[in-house]
Image (tube, rainbow, N blue to C red; front, side, top):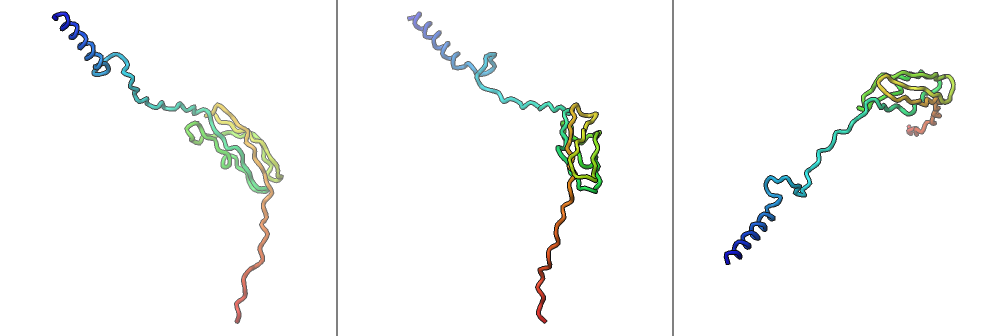
Length: 131
């Protein structure tokens, strides 16, 4: 009977230690997933975005610095250089190459010179009041 007691004690000890796996500090993976901290996105500040198109009416002044914007990867405006001619005396499309020392990319912006829209005057719709 003494042997039986020893075997029962060993089986009980193994069973208890099996229940304790994962409790306390163990070097084994408990299977519980730890929350993952979101990674801070890496923003390439040298990859810029540009105004895609711009338009101006015939006869009006075209100022590229006011009509074309360049934003760095942090969405902050940066200084730009413009290469291209826009003839505001003649309707049409004109390519303007835009670049910046703060950007690694360039873009050609299409500037459209349009005829002014003339809105016809409407006849008066007032109704005369009786005397």
